[in-house]
Length: 197
Image (cartoon, rainbow, N blue to C red):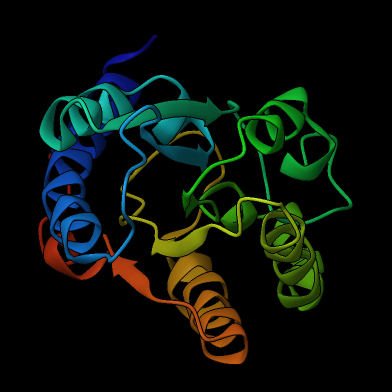
């Protein structure tokens, strides 16, 4: 892994720790009652920011024994359905549904800002709503939170922060509004703090 990717991951790790803090506040304010014999199941859905970070494990520690947090991230995954790594086609998605979560946190969209994938951004809302409805249809009837991804800093992965800001995040907000879902903003706190080269 080169230095730029390492710095990018380090910055994202810091972002995720702050997101976890905000997420914990949301979760603890929910009126979900744990069955004494069963914990509240939290499914963390996402790309590499979820799959290879420690944020689900930290969230587990913060929430305590009444919760079971599952990491269902898949590296490189997208919301857009016309890519080879669309999240809905991954085994992580099937495992997340089988988990029957009470709470779902979806942090996808960074890879949809890829300069090649972004050509299909007009499909993002429909594809995201399909993903959300799959979770809404579960017998567990989970509470669902949509996360606006953190900023994309200089990288050699063809990921564009401009695409994220102008196309992905507004569409996440649109999905949240149309489906009546809360959002967690992981973008704004770090928007003016770019990674150093």
